[in-house]
Image 1: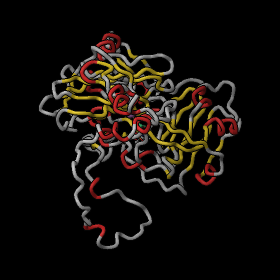
Image 2 (image 1 turned 180 degrees about the horizontal axis):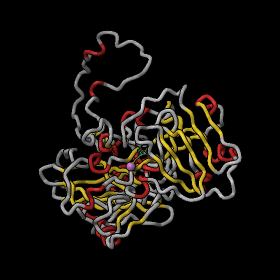
Image 3 (image 1 turned 30 degrees about the vertical axis):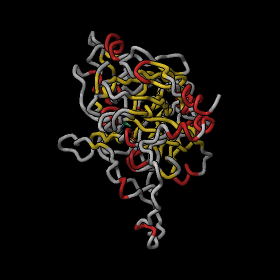
Length: 430
Ligand SMILES: Nc1nc2c(c(=O)[nH]1)N[C@H]1C(S)=C(S)[C@@H](COP(=O)(O)O)O[C@H]1N2
Ligand SMILES: [Mo]
């Protein structure tokens, strides 16, 4: 095949309304096809190259070195979406990650979402202590210096608040950007001590089945964790993307429970009590339970379901007329790896498989991409993730049929973006 034929076959539609084969975004795909294929994706072609101009920033030496870096001033508009705090508090509430302004799988620390029940404590690491007690042979107290001497592991994993995407349940689609609607979601490399190591040192009594976790914030937030999870993949995280945790994320040490609802990853961790039974704390009884249509509630629904969102195109990012676009987004599952993501550009009539950007890691955000030739007409784009257990992200309808509309957590239904001929993108229920 000649290069042109190859490009043409690659750009052949594979599903309705202009979806093209993911081959273009698979490793080396563009390279194999040659620069011509990429050229098709660039917005503007120049017929004759203009003479190179010397811009201002080449005419004098640049800024000096600095002890701690900062982003370009031209990126200053990329900010978390900060919700107004609850009345009478300074910091109870949430800020959301601007998902539609980022790319890749890692959330920069300064843009990690926040959820605090009583603000961010200003903890002096010298004075901070972590106590392990209760049903143990040897109660232990750790200073941060002591914790730093333990062997550490690193894992790239997502954190999602179980209250994320609540607007899907609303009868009418709510307006907002991808981050405003789905941004209680971030992904970092977390480094710290496997919790099991410290529990073994303390010696858990055979009657101990649960752990009470307590934070050192003014809310003294507490949750009960099954011992099995603690011994499996629980981490006492001390570093986030290579540097010490941010105060917002639990400095100097937080619990991190991969794949589970954000609430249970207790920040500013100061106490672990080994118990026989769950303690039934406020945050696992009056809150963070799933209210069913019949008035009963499910408790301890820890795992976050398989889910995906398209970050681009998405509301607030205007289209630039008909042409080739990359549909890109994030998929994740509390059960493990993402196996497949499918995309529809015709409101769910037909689907095409997206390319997954390596690495595809267990309980991490996975970036997906698919080329799309938009004809400039009205289109509804949506994504559907499947995880390694074969579980498929449910439709909004199926989710509501199963759980009703009174629950407020674990909302993982499929949402659509409506792309309109006037270049605007808005949220639609599909
Ligand atoms: N001590 C303490 N831990 C906490 C919270 C809190 O308010 N206090 N909020 C919880 C909730 S509801 C979520 S979703 C996550 C948010 O973590 P982040 O702020 O690092 O994104 O922390 C959890 N751990
Ligand atoms: Mo949360």
